[in-house]
Length: 152
Image (cartoon, rainbow, N blue to C red; front, side, top):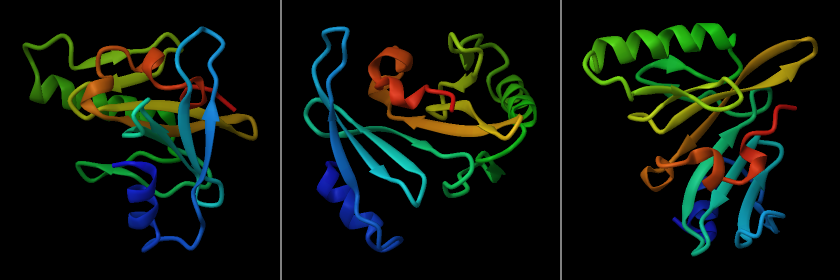
Protein backbone atom coordinates (compact mmCIF):
# COMPACT_ATOMS: atom_id res chain seq x y z
CA UNK A 1 0.00 0.00 0.00
CA UNK A 2 1.14 3.55 -0.63
CA UNK A 3 0.50 6.47 1.79
CA UNK A 4 -2.78 7.43 0.09
CA UNK A 5 -4.09 3.86 0.27
CA UNK A 6 -3.14 3.61 3.96
CA UNK A 7 -4.88 6.93 4.66
CA UNK A 8 -8.03 5.70 2.91
CA UNK A 9 -8.13 2.50 4.98
CA UNK A 10 -7.44 4.26 8.29
CA UNK A 11 -10.05 6.94 7.53
CA UNK A 12 -12.63 4.31 8.57
CA UNK A 13 -10.92 4.02 11.97
CA UNK A 14 -9.78 7.54 12.82
CA UNK A 15 -10.57 11.10 11.77
CA UNK A 16 -6.90 11.94 12.24
CA UNK A 17 -4.99 12.61 9.02
CA UNK A 18 -1.69 10.92 8.29
CA UNK A 19 1.22 13.34 8.46
CA UNK A 20 4.01 12.30 6.10
CA UNK A 21 7.55 13.52 6.45
CA UNK A 22 10.59 12.74 4.36
CA UNK A 23 13.56 11.41 6.28
CA UNK A 24 17.10 12.13 5.14
CA UNK A 25 19.41 9.51 6.70
CA UNK A 26 22.92 10.67 7.55
CA UNK A 27 24.45 7.39 6.43
CA UNK A 28 23.94 8.12 2.74
CA UNK A 29 20.88 5.94 2.24
CA UNK A 30 18.06 7.39 0.15
CA UNK A 31 15.33 9.49 1.70
CA UNK A 32 12.14 7.70 2.76
CA UNK A 33 8.64 8.66 3.77
CA UNK A 34 7.46 8.19 7.34
CA UNK A 35 3.75 8.52 8.04
CA UNK A 36 2.54 9.46 11.47
CA UNK A 37 -0.75 9.33 13.34
CA UNK A 38 0.25 11.05 16.60
CA UNK A 39 -3.04 10.69 18.45
CA UNK A 40 -3.45 7.08 17.35
CA UNK A 41 0.16 6.22 18.18
CA UNK A 42 1.21 4.87 14.79
CA UNK A 43 4.37 5.38 12.74
CA UNK A 44 4.31 3.96 9.21
CA UNK A 45 7.48 3.33 7.23
CA UNK A 46 7.46 3.43 3.45
CA UNK A 47 10.05 2.16 0.98
CA UNK A 48 11.78 4.38 -1.57
CA UNK A 49 8.96 3.60 -4.00
CA UNK A 50 6.37 4.56 -1.33
CA UNK A 51 5.18 1.06 -0.45
CA UNK A 52 4.38 0.26 3.19
CA UNK A 53 7.26 -1.73 4.69
CA UNK A 54 6.52 -1.53 8.39
CA UNK A 55 4.84 0.20 11.27
CA UNK A 56 5.52 0.90 14.92
CA UNK A 57 2.77 1.03 17.53
CA UNK A 58 3.21 3.39 20.48
CA UNK A 59 3.10 1.34 23.68
CA UNK A 60 1.09 3.96 25.54
CA UNK A 61 -1.21 5.54 22.93
CA UNK A 62 -1.35 3.01 20.12
CA UNK A 63 -4.00 0.42 19.42
CA UNK A 64 -3.73 -3.01 20.97
CA UNK A 65 -2.10 -5.31 18.43
CA UNK A 66 -2.64 -9.06 18.71
CA UNK A 67 -0.72 -11.97 17.24
CA UNK A 68 -2.49 -15.30 17.44
CA UNK A 69 -4.79 -13.85 20.10
CA UNK A 70 -1.95 -12.57 22.30
CA UNK A 71 -1.93 -8.81 23.05
CA UNK A 72 1.43 -7.20 22.22
CA UNK A 73 1.05 -3.45 22.92
CA UNK A 74 1.93 -1.86 26.26
CA UNK A 75 2.81 -5.08 28.05
CA UNK A 76 5.63 -6.21 30.31
CA UNK A 77 8.39 -7.11 27.82
CA UNK A 78 9.38 -10.38 29.52
CA UNK A 79 5.80 -11.72 29.25
CA UNK A 80 5.71 -11.21 25.49
CA UNK A 81 9.22 -12.62 25.11
CA UNK A 82 8.20 -15.78 27.01
CA UNK A 83 5.23 -16.22 24.65
CA UNK A 84 7.47 -15.72 21.59
CA UNK A 85 10.01 -18.24 22.91
CA UNK A 86 7.33 -20.86 23.66
CA UNK A 87 5.72 -20.27 20.25
CA UNK A 88 9.05 -20.71 18.46
CA UNK A 89 9.83 -23.93 20.37
CA UNK A 90 6.39 -25.37 19.64
CA UNK A 91 6.01 -24.38 15.98
CA UNK A 92 9.59 -24.44 14.79
CA UNK A 93 11.42 -27.00 16.97
CA UNK A 94 14.11 -27.69 14.34
CA UNK A 95 14.49 -24.09 13.19
CA UNK A 96 17.02 -22.08 15.15
CA UNK A 97 16.24 -18.99 13.09
CA UNK A 98 12.61 -18.29 14.05
CA UNK A 99 13.41 -16.21 17.11
CA UNK A 100 16.20 -13.66 17.09
CA UNK A 101 17.37 -10.59 18.95
CA UNK A 102 18.30 -7.24 17.52
CA UNK A 103 21.33 -5.29 18.75
CA UNK A 104 19.24 -3.58 21.42
CA UNK A 105 18.32 -6.97 22.92
CA UNK A 106 14.70 -6.94 21.77
CA UNK A 107 13.20 -10.21 20.50
CA UNK A 108 11.93 -10.69 16.97
CA UNK A 109 9.88 -13.38 15.27
CA UNK A 110 10.76 -13.86 11.62
CA UNK A 111 7.56 -15.78 10.78
CA UNK A 112 5.38 -13.03 12.27
CA UNK A 113 7.46 -10.14 10.90
CA UNK A 114 7.48 -8.73 14.42
CA UNK A 115 9.99 -7.04 16.69
CA UNK A 116 8.86 -6.40 20.25
CA UNK A 117 10.68 -3.17 20.97
CA UNK A 118 10.16 -1.20 24.17
CA UNK A 119 9.48 2.30 25.38
CA UNK A 120 9.42 3.99 28.75
CA UNK A 121 6.36 4.42 30.93
CA UNK A 122 7.64 6.46 33.87
CA UNK A 123 10.35 4.21 35.34
CA UNK A 124 9.10 1.01 33.64
CA UNK A 125 9.39 -0.39 30.14
CA UNK A 126 6.40 -1.51 28.07
CA UNK A 127 6.24 -3.24 24.71
CA UNK A 128 6.15 -1.27 21.48
CA UNK A 129 5.49 -3.64 18.55
CA UNK A 130 7.26 -3.03 15.25
CA UNK A 131 5.69 -4.99 12.41
CA UNK A 132 7.37 -5.35 9.03
CA UNK A 133 6.86 -6.94 5.64
CA UNK A 134 8.78 -9.86 4.17
CA UNK A 135 11.06 -7.59 2.13
CA UNK A 136 12.50 -6.25 5.41
CA UNK A 137 13.34 -9.69 6.86
CA UNK A 138 16.97 -9.61 5.75
CA UNK A 139 17.90 -6.67 7.96
CA UNK A 140 15.01 -4.85 9.70
CA UNK A 141 17.34 -2.82 11.90
CA UNK A 142 18.96 -1.17 8.87
CA UNK A 143 16.13 -1.22 6.32
CA UNK A 144 13.55 0.57 8.48
CA UNK A 145 14.50 4.09 9.59
CA UNK A 146 15.89 4.71 13.05
CA UNK A 147 12.51 6.07 14.28
CA UNK A 148 11.38 2.44 14.41
CA UNK A 149 14.03 1.58 17.00
CA UNK A 150 14.31 4.62 19.26
CA UNK A 151 13.50 3.83 22.87
CA UNK A 152 11.74 6.86 24.30
